[in-house]
Length: 313
Image 1 (cartoon, rainbow, N blue to C red):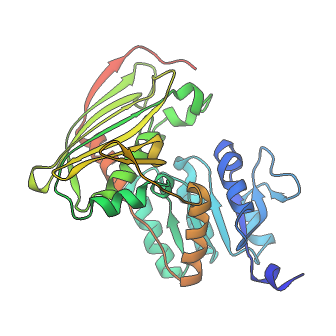
Image 2 (cartoon, helix red, strand yellow):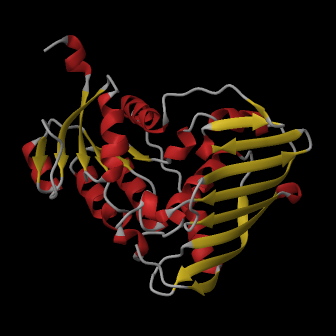
């Protein structure tokens, strides 16, 4: 074993579904500070990596694993996170960090009491254009923001029934990505003023949502989320200021000012998440921001409910 191996932090991945295989496993594999030492999955783990049937079994068998990354649906995440934190492990939460705001805040307080790191991730904040957009908007007089986040649920969440159940968020599962960018790039907060949520008559969560927000100085924000878009997918944020117009497109990957493309660069969303997690652990810090989830909670609290035709995969 080399000195580099000794410096690497062993991490376990809990939940080995589509997002774990598409994003988390490659991101961990490309991070020299981390080593995927184990998984927890009842449906099969990762070839060449030891797998455990439950988190409890992992925690008992592998006290040397310092951190866990939780990738299961949000409805079950609280119990897993609390168990890992009480066992003294650092915890990274896939977005959304939980099914409710209160459980995420409870986990934040529990992690602080246990002296471990808790990282509630928002992967879209790590898209290549987001940091530059935040910097450009910092001193601008922003008048209006328009968000269009429209995609095909059959393509991105095939057969994932949990996303339609209470706590699964429905169209807010992708929509919260836009809200995580919005709350990152605006220099001051906004608050929800109205919402319309469209539910298929056979589903417990919305398939579309239209939101309106207000901020200081007359700032208005409108957001349209829709899971019924076929063909090209739309993940755009347009910010109109008195000094020019900013556009983030492709989920924050591309940035333009007054229609002029800007040079942006980055590690990639999930590689940067794991870089951040390792940095937080090394510094003995946590990062738990519930602002995007608060906006979703407000939409469900105050939104007008509309009904549309049934949705079937």
